Length: 496
Image 1 (cartoon, rainbow, N blue to C red):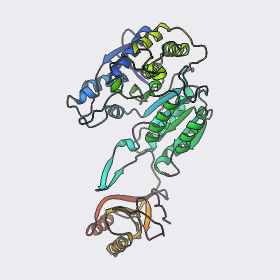
Image 2: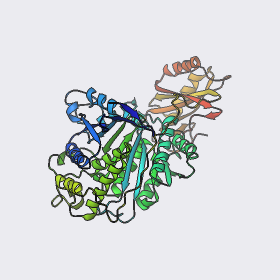
Image 3: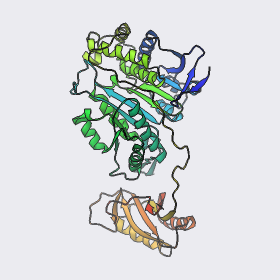
Image 4: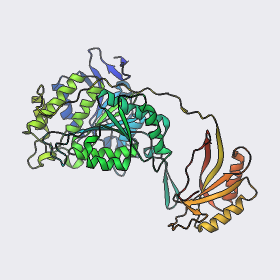
């Protein structure tokens, strides 16, 4: 049962009879019904697949496994490298982490791919507009790194970590996807006008990578404008690549444009493993009622088949699904109302009966093999020619007013090679005063610049911090660094 690497870089476990082995996780709530319906369609379409059924989610949390993912499931995915899963619940009151996020992070599935398209007989305010786009969301860093601290009893901090490596991978992924799907334009949506370093990293990586794909139009857009334009004129977009939090929000918005989460599939793809799942959750109130729409999970399986380069089977199933919707005789409750909608099993059987049929109006996009992007594996992909520590930000907890705090810190820094440049509160300079009116909290950033020769050394910084600590409670330090003469830090609002 060899694990092979395809010409496009994907890892696939192929059995002796030619079938491709995948891990199937039925999931929680409506998950088992959706997955069962999907497996029936795959079987009827004679998809060349074999399955290992494994568990994750609520049943695993109840066994005391804090991650929600047992070792047997991890080992199965390590073997098969491809998983199809139903939605997983993170129960309230036990379990520490989301099992969904655990799976994504364990296997470095750095690209979250969420396509949306207009479906026949699924009425929305945008019907007839021809919506057909993909959100490509960076999937493992940004705020979802989950690094948080209470800095004072009333002020919390979350670290937003965005790397050049992660940004380059997701940007290249977006262009490779556009090329494979015959799409002509990629938008990069960031908030780099405000977070010039973090969100700006993706913008800069995107612009660099875009030069390697001259046949594809590349455009940057501020993410709030992207949301505005998606509601105003969504048909202008083909591929949107963005950071983790932005992608989470925008992809849910786009699913709302085409009929809701019941029609929203997704893939989590890395260089080693790919996990396919619906965007929707476990919806426990509908579980076991045979009324749920399995389309999102079924389309996730179609995405999986294309990843496995089983294009004919994928097209066969998608055409049958579109034909069923276009015919309009068997529609689920989320489309026509649960009082008269088709049962899950009826809808599934209708799709199976329509295998081999082609819709008259709705078209299946042409797909080519998708090539996984290969990027530099170096831990430090950027090596500056020069770097220098030019100061330090010391974060302190204090209930003093800014002027009193500033005078005290200036006295404490006297005799050192540092001078207090400014103090900010929630990002706004409050000392020296600028004339603004700021509602203060007990969390101050105190910026000290180095006045000595060369760069600030650690013993000097620690001496300064020791002096500050003799009077104030500090909780966080950030060295102020220059790389190749450019500052690696931003200014406070109002700082000169």
